Amino acid sequence: MLRPSYEDILEKVNETVGEEKFDSKYSVVIAIAKRAREIVLEGDADSSKVVKSVSKSIDDIVSQNVSIKRQKAE
Image 1 (cartoon, rainbow, N blue to C red):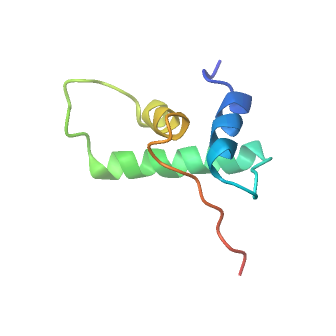
Image 2: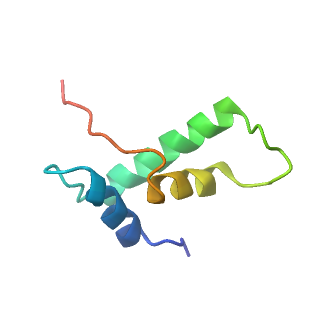
Image 3: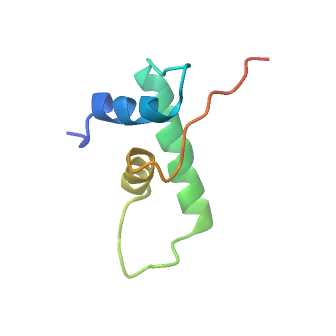
């Protein structure tokens, strides 16, 4: 099971976004996947720690080291 839960992640994300709250778990999953992809592409400077990219991206989002922003529909 995922820890923290999707609800916990949504709550943390919505603390920082202001008026436009995220209500879709899908949005959070996409953001986590995009952040994980960034982590893989950046490479890990501290390779002594083995942390999976998805776990690291969840930690980054929950600890508010990175933020999720809505993209404008074209």
